[in-house]
Amino acid sequence: AQKVTQAQTEISVVEKEDVTLDCVYETRDTTYYLFWYKQPPSGELVFLIRRNSFDEQNEISGRYSWNFQKSTSSFNFTITASQVVDSAVYFCALSEAKMAQKLVFGQGTRLTINP
Amino acid sequence: ETGVTQTPRHLVMGMTNKKSLKCEQHLGHNAMYWYKQSAKKPLELMFVYNFKEQTENNSVPSRFSPECPNSSHLFLHLHTLQPEDSALYLCASSQDKGGYNEQFFGPGTRLTVL
Figure 1: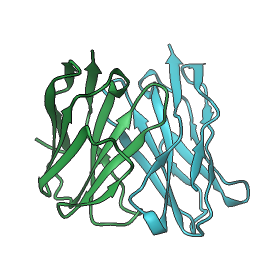
Figure 2: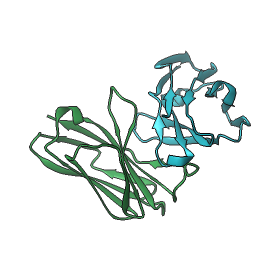
Figure 3: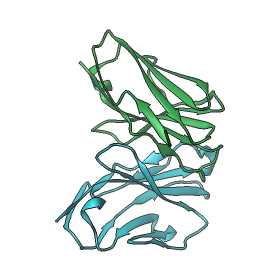
Figure 4: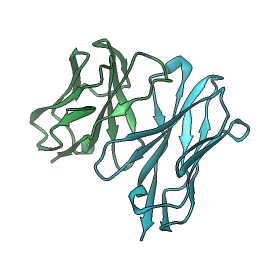
């Protein structure tokens, strides 16, 4: 069965620091998809990125970067030069190709950026 | 209106009440979802609808009854709920089937069962 683990329950850093959110996944499927979502205090989950299992290329989008490593089953998310507006709960999620619409989420990491 | 909207945003109900949650998506998607987010568990998928047909029921108790009259609207009818059903209920939509189509979420309905 698929599983996503976000071991960091809460992280608190000072503004402008870099911070990495960890995500480890388990799946028996060879084709799967990984996602990161952000949940600000308003409640809605905001889609950040999707990665396919056959594409291990890392991605950078502004201050955000993602490191996908199949060898360690990890899909970590780094925020560079953090800002107060980055404060939110961040969720990593996985779906397998054979049940593609079933997103399995990790517990989430609450990130607080202090001014 | 854009994206995925949900009403009401907050709901307090007694265990004997009957209420409904509404979700509407303005993205032209054809798949819609209900999720439950409670304090003690990760986000849990409840139901999936594709082209108005229910394709997934994740062992949800019958006191939760979904309805999808068309691809843009999704309801969750609630009756005789329990206090442990208090949670944030999130609606989402996506285009077609396939995990490569990301799901877009609404702001949720914060439900409190007394």
